Image (cartoon, rainbow, N blue to C red; front, top):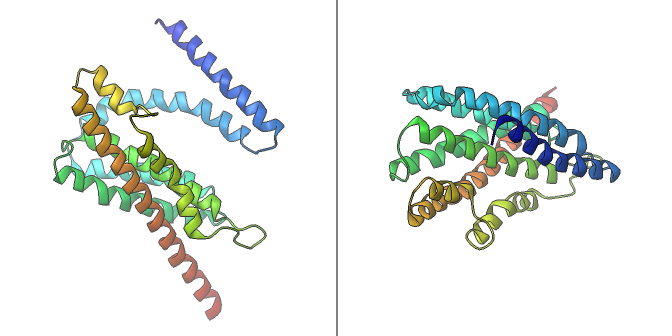
Length: 235
């Protein structure tokens, strides 16, 4: 496809989002603005990624790779924090939770030689952990958000809700869902068994890291909130 055909295809798909956004607006769901802004940002962010990807994959320093993954966690934590009424504490907590999730899962997968130990592998995996953990934390924060000062959902219920998506994906993989890594590896010429193995490792990683990120974020929020309460009591 040439450039004009690509743009036309993207615009046609974008019109689906416009229609859904209008529907959400008519239902007063409060989703339209975020949906449309995100749809405009997405292509710009992907273009930026395309320009810097070759540079990222050439990075040899483990500290630099860790710094980039930490940057993913901080940006993802910022997004998750928007779903909590204590934004500052939520940003710090979710960023910390995502960083711990990366620290728990990625070194282990490299240690057992599930993936190669290089930037071409670690940086994309780190982005997956951050993105999926971000979604789980956002759902948890949204579910436990108090209404008029009263919590209407327990943390346990919020955590259960947050884990529905990754667990459901694991349940139906190969039956309903054909994940991107599996399809991409097959199209690239890998065997079906190699593609299935890599996809399973990634799915296990996502479930484990999302749960870890949620639990650590909640514990961090508890610790920060307790500190604020103690300071107020002392005053």
